[in-house]
Length: 211
Length: 211
DNA sequence: TCCCTCTTTACAGCCCGTTTACAGTTAGTT
DNA sequence: AACTAACTGTAAACGGGCTGTAAAGAGGGA
Image (cartoon, rainbow over all chains, first blue to last red):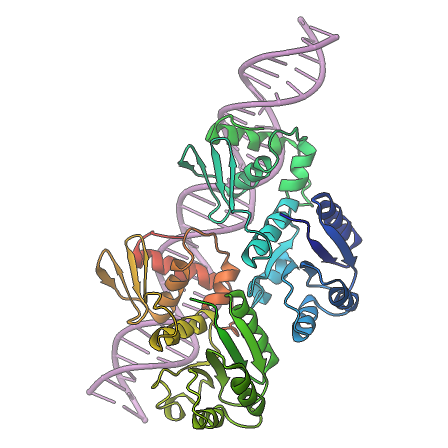
């Protein structure tokens, strides 16, 4: 994925920092905004490629921001950040027109994957193929399918996310902490042993290919 | 379907935004208009391939707009947007001559399907086949009937719409929110559980083919 | 030998998807 | 207009599989 101009809008400094650090590390140009009005200004001014927009903001809601900028004819794709509870009912229209949403607490890898998906769908990015290949391993990001030597293997959601993260960082030593930070939700409060368990599951199902 | 020039005419900003975002995302060039007079100007000026025209407008009714432009010899096909009540009497005769109508509140998928149907009928589009085939599943979009291995199955309207949406996105992971946003009417305010229920109905009737 | 770390296996809780049942509403018929 | 049938949407019951923890097994280094 090419370098993108990303605007992160959230009132919680922790989230802003987490996202901006990760996005910057991924090679993007990041701007941040703590509230709705400021976000509108920055969107008009900076013309970002994508906006990460918290729904719950102190002044104007994320939906309000969206209405405002759409009314100005700005079609920048938006990735909404919503609380788990709001999800059920207020989702109407969130996934329309290339937009999408993730629920808090999210995992970093999920955010990155969604951004890629949006850029792919809206054609802004030069279709980096939605298939990841590492050796005899093949991951289809649309179908969330994994195959080894053409043979499909059945993975649980967490297993898939983990494998995807490993596959996007081949030939690289990753610490358990890094894996935990990327694959698990940011408020995960458990033992690191879970990483070891899941790596073990994967090795049994896809064979000892990477690490 | 090729890229089309679409004009969306509605006085409610929400509807305009919803439609323009979706249509743009589908690869079309979209212009919008908030009333009848402006719409007439834009139709003459832009010569769109199709017009999505609300019947109830602040100045001239959608029918008035139609009369006016037809009087000028403009034969652009029109998809009328009408309120649920108006349907029976006023809409009579609307479906002749390539025009059609949908009632508010509509679902996005229905709008897209109607546009495809119109373009197919008026021959502007290179007949993208009105039959969807996925594995042993066959969906006839003209007759709205579905067959598995040549055997007809009887589906309710909602079931048909859902199956159609799933069939047009094969081998792709779809979230409940995406399905809800595309298949159900835009003002649906209920639980997402309904998606699960209907998916279950489908699996019983067409067998576990896709997802 | 002991200790430390990585790997694997076992297991309990629980979340989530599936299915079924049911009430409310609509549509179609006589 | 009343009757019937069917469809939509909600809710509750069910079951399975996934998640996360803990403990046993295996290897290496000092």
